[in-house]
Image 1: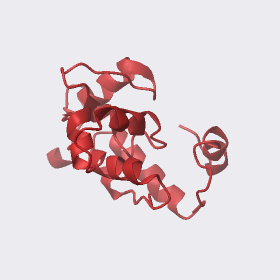
Image 2: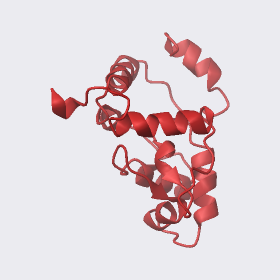
Image 3: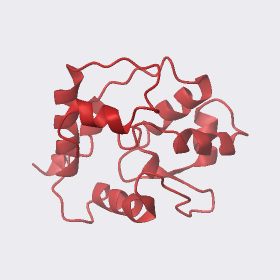
Length: 147
C-alpha cells in the first residue's frame, strides 16, 4: 500500500488523465481499504466514485461491476448486458482491463462465460483467486457480519 496520495498519483498518472484530485477523500478511502483487508468486504462500497468523465460504456460497466456481491462472480456477458450492450462481452473485458481502481471497481469478480478466471491485470490470477477466497471467508479473515 502506498502511504501518501502523491505516491499513488505518481503510479497512476496515465490512468488519471483528466481527473481531479480530492485530497479530503484519501483518508476515508484508505480506511475503507484497510477494513476490506481485515474482512469487511462491504467497506469498498463506501468509496464514492465520480465516473462522469469515463467513456459511457466503460462507466456503465464499472458501475455494474460494483454491484457484484463480494465473493461472487459474474461473466463478461453479464457485465455487458448490465451495462446496456448485451452483445459486447469483449468490450466489457476491455473496460475491466482499463479499470483504474481494481479493488474499488472489483474486476476480480468478473470471469469468462466458461467459468475460467480469464485475466487479471492487477496482480495476476493468483491475486484474483486470493481476493475471491478472502471475500468468501476462506482465508480465515473475520467478516464484518461476524463482529
